[in-house]
Every structure is written in C-alpha cells, then in structure tokens.
Length: 330
Image (cartoon, rainbow, N blue to C red; front, side):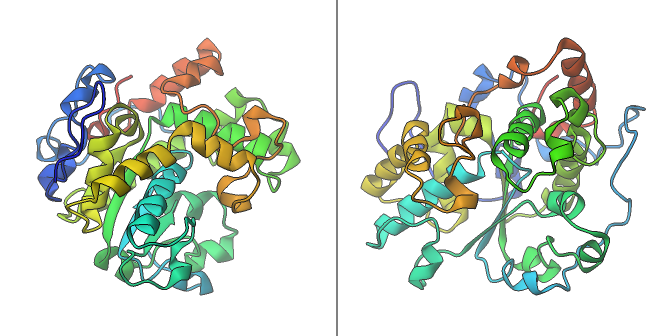
C-alpha cells in the first residue's frame, strides 16, 4: 500500500521485518540528523569498549526471570515495545491506539485491550531492565518484578524504541523532578548535572541498558529498532514499519493519516491539558507548569538547553560506550 506524500517526506512503505531491516532502522532521509548512519548489524561484533569511563555497570550475569504477580501484566502480548524512559513511547502508543481503535470502529482509548477485540493486537509497553535496576527493592529484584518473562520475550515480536540518551536523560530528569509525585524529595532537590552522574538514575545506566537490549535482541528476525529521531524526520515511513511489525502490512490510508494527525505534538499536548486521560500516561504534574507535562518539548538535541558545558562533556564521554549500531554520534 502506498500512502500519500507529505512535504519533505517520502512515501511510507511497510517493509519486511528481518534482521537486515533491523540494521536499516533509519532511512536515508535521517542523514540530515546523523552525519554517519549506522552500518549493518553484522559489521559490528558485540561491543567491548576499551573506555575506562565505566565506574558502574550492570551485573555481568543478570538473569531474565519474573516470579512476581506482575508477570501476568507483562504476558500475552503480540508484540512488546521496550525502551528506556522518555524515548517516545507515549507517542507510539497514542498513534497505535488511534489507528487500531478507528480501524475496528471503537472510540479512542489508550487501553484498547478493554474492548476485548481479538483483531486489535495486544501490545506490552515496558522499560523492562531499566526499571529492574531503578525501581525495585532487593526482594522485588530477586523476583524480577519488572522484567518481561523469558518465555514471553521469546514468543512475542520486539519493537526496540531508542532515543539519544542525552535527550532521554534530561527529559527523564525533568519528569522525575517536575511531574512524578512519587519521586523522593532528596532526588528532586538535586541539580541535573549531579543526577546525571548518579550510578542508578544517571545516563550511564541508560546506556548500559540499551546495550544489553541490543545484545539480547539484535539477531532476532522478528525485532525492529525504531529511533525517536527518525519518527520526527520520517513519521510516515517509521510508523509504517511499526505497523508492519504488528502484522498490519497494508495500513488503511484514511485511518493511518488520521492517527498520524491525532498523535502529533500539538494534539497530544491538548489531550494532556484536558486531564481526561490516565494519570500515569498522559497528565501533567501541574497544568500551569509547561515543564511538568509528559508531552513537553519533543525537541532533538534539546539537552544542550539544560546542561552546563561540563555536563555535556560528561554525557559525550558516556556516549562513547553506546553500541554504534544505534547510530548516535558524539
């Protein structure tokens, strides 16, 4: 199926989901964002950085398991969207919900599973390993409370959503300190540069987590990598790729175009300001504070507006250990 062109965009075409397509997750048009596109996955062996930057890293033998009652919530999905926080997950979710609800004649909902319509794919949205290390107490970690069960990971298709960790970290810091009521006051009182260097809430853990996921999923033929930046530059093409990963290889043009418009920044901002949606998914911490919105700026390389030069240098150094297959340059 061919979708109408938008100004400055090529037609969005569904593509076959293979390990080769994973390596080509970004399109030619995104060269305006990244000077050097990532090479094919097989051009890079698993990364063993020689950098001495790592002052903390994930345990070398973490085991995917989930013996908690939450395992049921993370099971039964046709596909799993995995990302570090603030990587565009709400954007992708809003688009998919708008598309499938309209496609099968249901009112819009961020929880379409409540319609019990088997035609709508069940999608699990998770921060998986990242939450495993940032949210759990030791007994919850032992049980793997936030990890997708291994059987589900092997069975479901994987959509790995990525964003430049520097932007993702700054957005997450603002969300923790301005939007999330549960954040400890001690953490809220810390400046962005200090939290960036924190071994748990800082940028290094985000990068380590992304590397672990890529190591786990990259060779799978039913996995695609979707970058937040590419969603901005070529939304038609990227959302077609996401739909194709869900088995919707020939999207309905009218519903696709409407979902694209519905999930644009301005409309999502209005949705959030209305206070009509799920508090955790799409409501601001303070409707009068623009920085407390989940849909805040949507800006690429916006981290430079919040970080001091020494913080940027630290973040750039941390980026040196990010797997090059993500395609981000320092």
